Length: 446
Image (cartoon, rainbow, N blue to C red; front, side):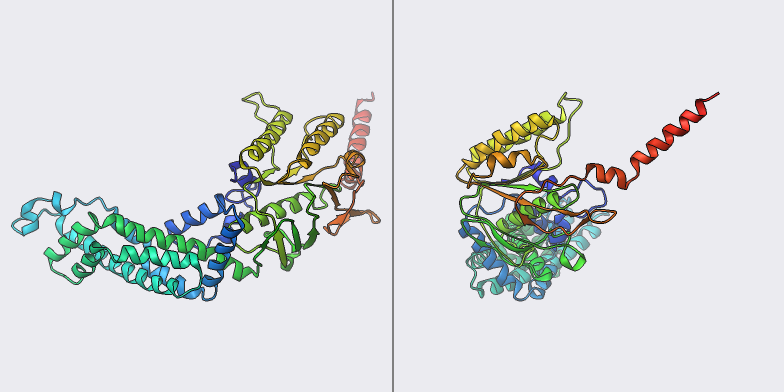
């Protein structure tokens, strides 16, 4: 399960920045409506067992061995064009005037109707031929998922209605076209729709196989712990200056506390972890050199919290309710990977520390939770340092120069660095205020 807030936090389909990229932009290689719907479904309802993940990976590898071949078949099938023909609003032949069907008298629109049927007939026949070829390709793979898809295609292609469509497809007379249209948009429509939907499901898998191959991502291995080498955010690949990080957690770890100053990389790292887990559970490759990860029933985030003035919901109350949503998700789905970016920052430091400790203490005891918490509250480290279920990581800044420099490298331990005053001085905020105050004072003098 992935809720709408998490999808937004991770920039899966939409982004807080009107010009920013989305994960969908990176992984969508589909050209059909049905392909996009199946790809979207794969990202929003990913696999929940290790066996399902491995089966998806197997299918993706098989499709990735020759990406161009399936792409040509998807284009030849052109399911969107066939779908438009099947959903055409022309009267079915059975509802048309008998005089038009027998040629005694035909209304002005009848010639246009026949041209539409001729076009749809050609597209539908090409789709059936392409689906038959795709079935052969899928049946020749060693992927159980793809072979099952081939069997479903074979079953629909073997229906009597499908055979009748192929026979009527060779007829070019008006009567032949009318008979073809009556069958295609009548009794055979559910069968053709099922064929197109199966092709769309394969295209959705093909899209994830394509992005994995094109970007050089690696397929993760389901495991009891999280261990990743060379992980980076997919929007910030190393080729564009992004930094890859390694992380290896003990099986006992349930909460990772990530500390460090502003702009050091905490939020980006949390998103990179969650996105990699989402891609892994979709059977896709991940932006890392290698990855082992637990299989969970939900991926959860609390990153971009906003208050709701109309509902009388303060920022802090919105934060509390988001943590409550995590608790409910764990109760319902029993396992989760979650990322929490600076929880409880909407209240004072004392309350935030107390609330963070209370929540972490309970998450640590959950047997199937893995939660990453980015926080400036280094005070919680002293209380949690000896707990084997808590692991501390940090990012840091080099403050030796005039401006802080960041290497975005993940390190073990806790950081106590703070850049609040450093950034105020860097941006000359205090100097501007002092100059403005002095100027205002001089202007008030008589």
